[in-house]
Length: 188
Image (cartoon, rainbow, N blue to C red; front, top):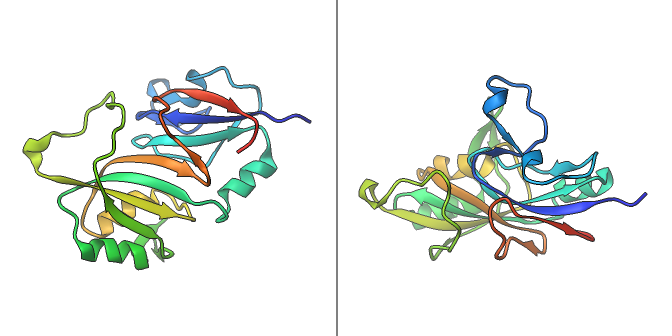
């Protein structure tokens, strides 16, 4: 069977799914609104509604499973509230305690560092402006992906996330894609 594979720049405000049966379903934006995907296409990994960036989509369940494994690094560029400290960066690097479904979880060691402000397309819903205080951009590279993990890590370190963009999965980069842009690819 020939499988279809896609990369997508998920815009802010979209759910990383094709069907939503929850409350206010008619107000939710879904990935299927961005492109006419072939039947059986599934998102590989998720980004929450407020997050943006690179998502893989495929019709191949085996490929989906491999990408979700810890084999692939996932890199996020994260704007946090305040001027982040070296101590907070080290906490995230070495593993920080967060809550997952009401249970305390110590994240695995990861890479984290302060970066220059990246250039991303403006969001439809703007981030607060400079009048509300300074912000810092941080690159975080993980091999795991617990529910809202990056947001929970920055909050646990004392610097809540304001904007989160996944820029890389494995060797595939977001590059100059625009929000909502979909590209069919031969493989991941």
